[in-house]
Length: 524
Ligand code: NAP
Image 1 (cartoon, rainbow, N blue to C red):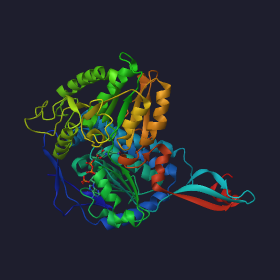
Image 2 (cartoon, rainbow, N blue to C red; image 1 turned 135 degrees about the vertical axis):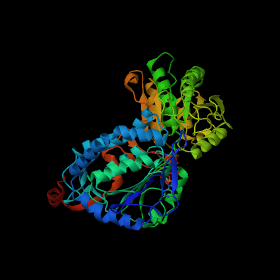
Image 3 (cartoon, rainbow, N blue to C red; image 1 turned 90 degrees about the horizontal axis):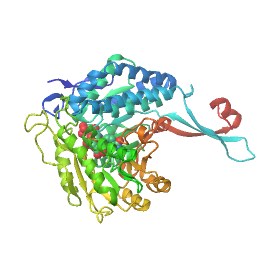
Image 4 (cartoon, helix red, strand yellow; image 1 turned 135 degrees about the horizontal axis):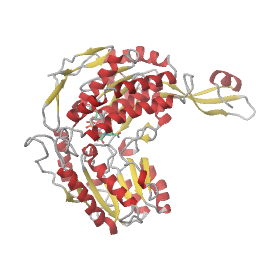
């Protein structure tokens, strides 16, 4: 079986520890093995000392041109990458595109952003500030690239988007990258890394790949390094307590769990475009990537009067997907398996916990026969829809406000249609990546911005007028902030130019107005 090596300190390194096997989640056929390499201290030093200076010697625009080259290179291998995504991630072709094209999209977006950035080695933030009215001394804020390594620890659900999206931002900011994909779906990340390394587009040390567990990687990190982590809240909690974070001020960005809610407004009526959009989005957000999206909808707040009609229409759509759930290698299949046996076990036990406070209105968590799959094989779960009683929906102790079931699972929550009740219920999720409001009621929507907004990293507003061209809320655009407060980790990634801040140091340069103007080009 093929062994997937790490690319560290300028060469491919085989691991010496016990290998893990990665499998096709639809058939359970072994695909490759991953044996973790050691020598992580050397790799950290190599990235910092070779990759960092080489990247910083380039301007933003030159680094942006490298991103454009990478996007072009990988686009040339897109079909093969999609095939590998289907085989190694349980993705339908559409899901594979969501991941692979998403990654290419971030590279392209940051390459485009680079064209708007200055030739200087820093980014100015606003104009120089007057400190004392009678003095010529000014303070100019700017961002300079950090002199460390950007370590990217990614979740299993987006091996391409996760790795490329994070790398695009760090490389443009001027930081070398060490990417660590989640082991179970790392075959795709490994292939992308192979293409990047073989093409020799990036300077030595600018991009490294660690396969398998992180081992003692964080022990070697210090104050100029950055860790961007995407994954579960428990892993995040462990990383937050690491001495490198606590003692050395290692910058740690966390993208974690999220109980994303959608809110149907009190005015939403059957037969409108907005109603159809809400239904379409709910179906997509439950079933795309088999619900394994950090931005997937987990809670649907629906005015009591319209809940039965919405539930029945949604259940009908989910039944169609359920009948086409199976091996994504088959063209007839619309939804694939979960990524691992552990994910399936966790999702089933999660549904059982949700059932303590809500009842299943669609789907069978124990179903075991699926389309074009050998009996008993694969990690499949059909879409599961639950519904809470009106008296339960706002219960702060209810499991649907505490537990992210990472699969095609969501709960319908009836509410009275008031903005205050909606905000209270959304807040019980403890902070989310995204919420979506479907309403033409201006007052309701304004309340959503002020009262639901603080719980979120992104708020999607849909009204009748924009319904025809609206995107489903789980899609993350590189121009918009990705991250959320509280349970979602408190992180911030992407967001166009804002995303660069993670990899740069904010510096106030204080000096005479004319010197700052000469040196930095600042205006005062
Ligand atoms: P996970 O188990 O926390 O793993 C995430 C990553 O952390 C993997 O690469 C894993 O490596 C690594 N890891 C595990 N223990 C570590 C440690 N002690 N030190 C350093 N790295 C460690 O999460 P997952 O199961 O892959 O992903 C599912 C979760 O990710 C869900 O909760 C989902 O909500 C969240 N997620 C969030 C976002 C977001 O943007 N907010 C996006 C996607 C997913 P191994 O695989 O080698 O163990």
